[in-house]
Every structure is written in structure tokens, then in C-alpha cells.
Length: 187
Image (cartoon, rainbow, N blue to C red; front, side):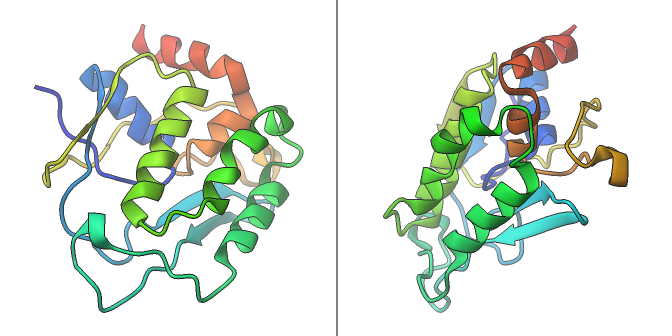
């Protein structure tokens, strides 16, 4: 049976490559909410460095992921959209995918689990990931460990290849060529 992947917000290329190795992206979407993890954070390859974007949650509520609520006390959506646009506005495929991805942040969802599921489904679909995506209500998962092969990134000339960023990076830089990237990995 394939290993379960963690429920990460806009997961990394490494996360998807682990799913490819498993034969399916099987996501353990249940369990407890853990602070300061990739459940609320994701990295983007910004112009100055890798930038970590974080979604604020309501503290003091349930410890279950499915009951964890997103806070509306600060303008995080505006900050995320601005950061993503700054990082990827010059990427070859940004204008072909921004309108498909950025609205996920503006949805009226109040559940962190819903935002995570929506982000994973969107990236899986837009990146044409060739293995099935399955959500299971389990708590146990294996951390992804695969090192992604390099591809061209917008600010690579300044910072070199940054492997541990969200798969948004792959989407905006490779677009439909992501299907070839997956196929090359599977060879």
C-alpha cells in the first residue's frame, strides 16, 4: 500500500514526486492540527530569497485539522497574492495559471482543511500529475524525502535552484511542460 502524504498547503514538488514514486498521491487529511508546519505555510522562490507565506488560524479552538478555522483578523490574502505576483509575475506561465490558482486564496472558506484540500486538488490538476489523488481520513503519514530534479526558475541566476518551494513554482515556470517533468522523473 502506498505511503500517506501529509496534508500540506500548496505542497512542494518533493511532495508530488513522493506521490509519483508511490503510484498515487494518497493524502492523510485527518488528524490533529500542528502549529508551524506546512499545513499553514508554503514557500515561494521570491526575488530576494525563499519567502515563507503563512495562513493565520484561530487559536484556542479544536486541535483537529478539519475543525481548525482560518483567521480573518489580518490581510493575509492580499499579502499572499502580492508576494506570489512579485515572485512569479515574470515566470513564463504565470498569466496562464494565476487566474486558476489565486482565487483559491480569496474563497470564503473558513476551514484550513478545505483550503489545504483545494490547494492540493488545484495543483494536482493544473500540473497534470499522472497518478491518482486520493484523500484518506487517516492521521499517519510519511514525510516526503525525494530530491527534485532542477528546472528553470525565475530568479535562479541570483539564488541558484531552490528545491523546497511550493509546486506553484513548477506550475508558473513550466506550465504544461510539467507533464514532461513528471514523465522524465518516472523513467
